[in-house]
Length: 87
View 1 (cartoon, helix red, strand yellow):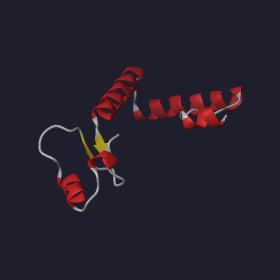
View 2 (tube, one colour):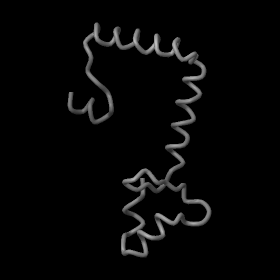
View 3 (cartoon, helix red, strand yellow):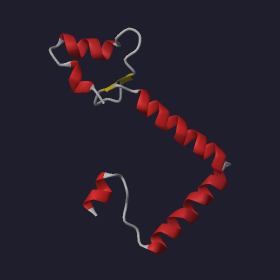
View 4 (cartoon, one colour):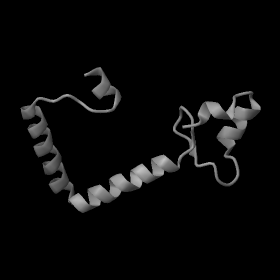
């Protein structure tokens, strides 16, 4: 159970899982979200998450390309190691 929670998985009984699926499908119908659109959004989110190399506690992120962002430059100037922000 603990290992599943660490991996972001929840341990639902069969009935709770089915109710959750029904709820999600109803919300998708309500907002006009197709399975294809959901799949594309999930793939895009996964690609973005992979691309991020540095992140702070406030949600600022940087992919390591281009000029170093101000939030990271300030933190490094204040003495913080850049490795502290590595994802």
